[in-house]
Image (cartoon, rainbow, N blue to C red):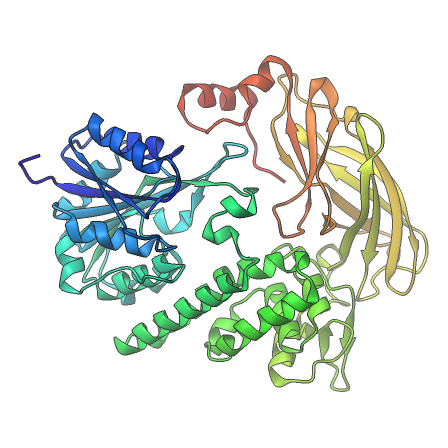
Length: 554
């Protein structure tokens, strides 16, 4: 190319020969054609160099650079490409992701409309196992706007990606803004600096990045975000957070911005690790606490006050060195699940767990007094329903053993009538069960759920449903009802049973954080083939959604 391109798109890659062609194809297919494509190879040892050379032979817009040694991260290959970029505007793409066809066109148009240092657009997250598509931080991209610096909108710090943005190269060069090297979570530091240094940046609502998520990837193939079991991963995230703090302090940002950054760390970064705690042994949890607690001690008290009760309880139990209880508290985060028990001190304050906290910070984190667990309306009372055993019970059924904890003693100490509900296709299947007392504030029961008995729509049902347990207040004539989620066992291995009408139903935990029990329905036959695990775009997927009227999980 003799004429300077409008945009340089850098595609970083390491040992990813299989997916690199897909990423490059998405760049070559951009509706804005005047682009330069730089493949930055972080010293791959597989067939990536050969594949990259073949791709460059197919399109003279492509050139390849190769690092002399592997850097172990994303920062170095991006920085090397940035130094050689010829265009006035820059974008970054990872080799396992894609750009939607109009990404460059849309972001360039936004630059033309406003004098912004960078423009940014929405992100589609695509699950590789199911093809399901969901927005990333969708609330931040609901409205098109130009933001006059981070002080104008501190909540933008929740969006740390570098890959959904188009930067003016002059802006990056003027501030010597580069990615940190030798450190994971480099995007977070780079983006925090960009938000802080920018005079203005424009946010558009259209998707400009397609981010592929492999939630069940093998450990060796998992992305950095999915290697949270490594304490070095924890250490890098805390180190990056400290570097962001130092940068914000150096540039004199307001307390409002600092609080928002702290809130983001507590409710997003820390929350990711907290959700994993049920799968970690107490010794790992203790080492984790040693890494994160010194950093938490310096965060804004106002940010802690904005945390959810259950999330803050996990922090409190870590601070109190009650690691097994922290693992228990981490089950069912974000679903208003009660503790197994509570305790009241001599001041009449009610706390999460079996023992009054001994530190001032622990008392603040674990205090549940204002929830009025014993006196609030029964329908909003908090119980804890844990599945202690789940197994097949024939070709179409599963058997569950359930233990219910009633920490505020809202239920009478007598056999308890309960009902299990699940609603595939919007049609409820209800099974009664009896819960017998098994100690103070504890009830146990068993139920057989035959999924062949579910009344499904004639066109079948594809989707996810979460069974719930309903208990009734036997102490009142009205018999008010309370419905809550069922927590899956932490070591629960998914299995499959047959459902009505040739359906297959996968019985599994929700995600990896020992959350709700989840039933994933997939019809068989012609409809099943149409609705299989494909990426949710294109005419086939639109036809499938029109056929079944996909509903949100619940």
